[in-house]
Image (cartoon, rainbow, N blue to C red; front, top):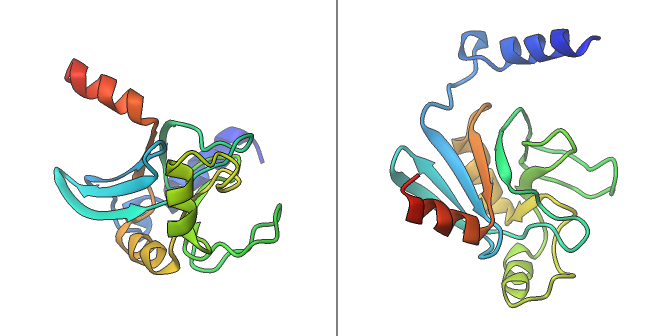
Length: 158
């Protein structure tokens, strides 16, 4: 299929008119340096969870994305790892999903253990991943932030 057709089909299948809940004003912000995410609905913080992001060489890339695919049960084809409650947000396979020992890995990463981390995904406990999976519909905006970038944005008033 050509890229334009694939993009158009994706837009149709994920649109509210096709039976999907609208993302509305929901947004998930992932703070890489502090290893947590915040789920916002408008200006209200709905959830805050510890996460583990990419390790050296497999970094989670800062940027703005949206959820374009969701799977309650998924297994990584590249790594053979289970990814419960996977919400894919990048074309290179990065997702927010449940993972083993997420809090411990998160704390170690915050303390500077750069070799601890994911293969680029945003991992959280299975219970937290389920809550987020049920809360965030297709199209939900995902903003991955290096903390110093967020502080610069706040200082400039953006």
